[in-house]
Image (cartoon, rainbow, N blue to C red; front, side, top):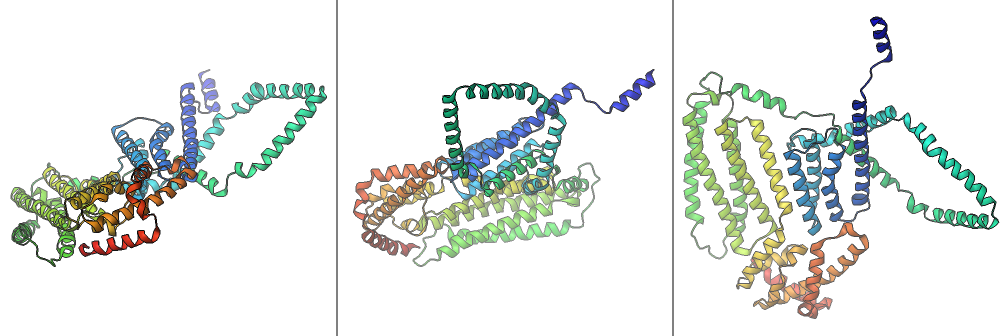
Length: 538
């Protein structure tokens, strides 16, 4: 008897419990809704969008859409952090967007998908995870289609019995009732003619273009690929596993052949850095620079070369303290030399910042000098990571992954920073204090709307050439702001930039200050005089 029952069970094939079936159905439903929402979101914000406000909505809602479609949705600290970064970035894009901000948003969307998949969003793995959607997207959509086929046989019966039969009855008896009344027949025929004409006239607007269909397909494909990745391992995982084996604290101490070479190298660079830092302080600190001083060579190019030296020192330290060197019993003395050189490197970083300050004192702040400050800050953080690696015996993969995070975070923070506001607020203070040199940064460089918002105090500048040049500049940008406002209004909410609206309102309030330069020839003459005057500080 038991054999017969067993045979019947085998012949019936594998079965699943009702709970498992319901869970699979819910997972399929979430994934389908997530893909559908992603398609709608991309259509509204990207294909039909015209600016950064649309991208802001996409970045704000993308983590929620991905979380909804995840097979096992959970909120972890990493996902919450990435979602928070996207939310802050969305606010920035609505105020004033940038290409860097848009790129950062799409990178963070991939990072959010990795967090949902249980992976750490290392920068080395982010592009690989994004590219795997080319394959995973097809697998994900095929899985949804197959799953829908398994749970779908009930749908036709449900439709025909519960929905189809009532509709058929309504259609049949409704037709009979209409035919029984000639006036209803005429009215119904007129309504059908109107509906057909309206549908035909609006058919062009109703049917999507081939490009829009491609956007739908791409959005569905990428979303499915992000939700069901085919690649879940870190690219550097095998190197990270292999690295600690030779440097494990439990391994037996043994002298490293490279110890003497490393010790001598550290002594040599310590002496070299000490000599150079003395020269740096003697030549560039506490010194009044004469007319004709090569500011660009010393303060701009020189700072770049010193930053390169600091980066090279970071690489040398990270490579030196690895492998068998960490097992050498003489390691403490080598570490002491490393700490001395590290202190010199931090002093060198101060020297780099000082050189940049020399250039800023000469003719003001610029966007590129802000980039330089972010860059040297990232290099210093990277150097501190090397010190942490040496102290905690971390492997090289650990260091590389966090170095790349440092660069990525610096780029993200730069995208969030109101650079032009900070730059030109500093320049305006200098000019209003009687130093007209920073006016060259206003004359020679493009300025965004948020930068223009801090320029109005200069309409009362004591320097007449700068004052009239700023009034002419504001007149020119006021006319441009009116055109931008009309364009954004025609494009809709996705093109909204609050900074542009704030600038237009501010310039309208200052109309009396720039009204005299509405004439194009007079405005061009004032701007040319301003350009030639400011160029002496270039």
